[in-house]
Image (cartoon, rainbow, N blue to C red; front, side, top):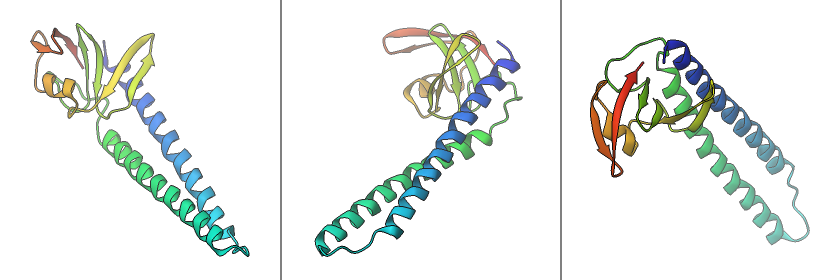
Length: 151
């Protein structure tokens, strides 16, 4: 495990968040257009209901966009070239139970035929491993997790 792998995982996470932000922005534009084009029909209640539904969906999208942007900003504040000796934000960790990138919660990414779980340090596994060093073992989910490598 090396810095090159860590950079690839970082870039994969960054690309995924950029696509998510871009998709949500595009969807919001479509809803804004739909709201502005909504014309009052002869049935007033139908118009008001349709407009209210569009606004609710738009609100949901704004929240999703804000969360995606927050995650993107958090991720890009990390330095993928920095090496660590302890598990902390931005560390890529090989354990006896798999590979983990402690940055933002995005699920799994595949890099070089490896499955790497991108998780937050606030997650249960993150809390179990935070500030641990290579060679340490922790008990988590009724299993022993040994830290094999940290980048």
